[in-house]
Length: 42
Image 1 (cartoon, rainbow, N blue to C red):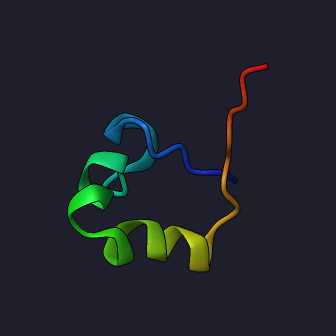
Image 2 (image 1 turned 135 degrees about the horizontal axis):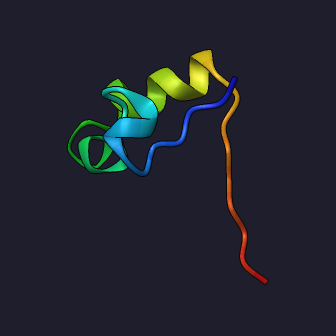
């Protein structure tokens, strides 16, 4: 399972927008509890 933080529809309440206001409460939870998906453009 992975969580995509770009949009609420993909990640319930843990979004990038909310993480900008509360990084530990959002990204911190994800880092501690789930694998992270990244996207790299070459």
